[in-house]
Image 1 (cartoon, rainbow, N blue to C red):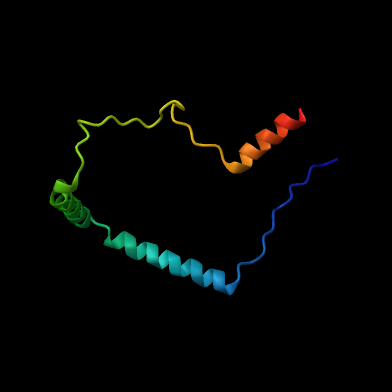
Image 2 (cartoon, one colour; image 1 turned 135 degrees about the vertical axis):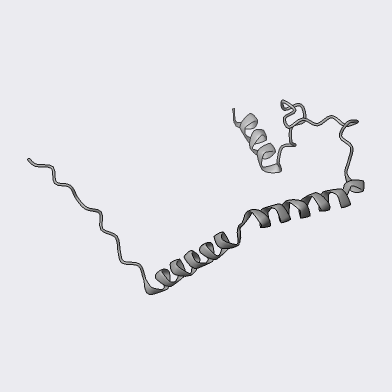
Length: 93
């Protein structure tokens, strides 16, 4: 038997989908044209200015210890549903 390659067929896009696709392409092209090194430098300057203006509100981390994971030293409390399930299992077993 010969293996025949079956070509996947997809339904044609609707008119609404085509219009939306073209609209998005135009928006992306317009965005790409606006994205220049000048605009990037300008935004960089705005971000640095915002950070310096809000420097007084920043919290000093030198006196605080921060860790992403506390190795389950502070676990979350059990929900009522889980507590009820544990009670039920203890009673039945």
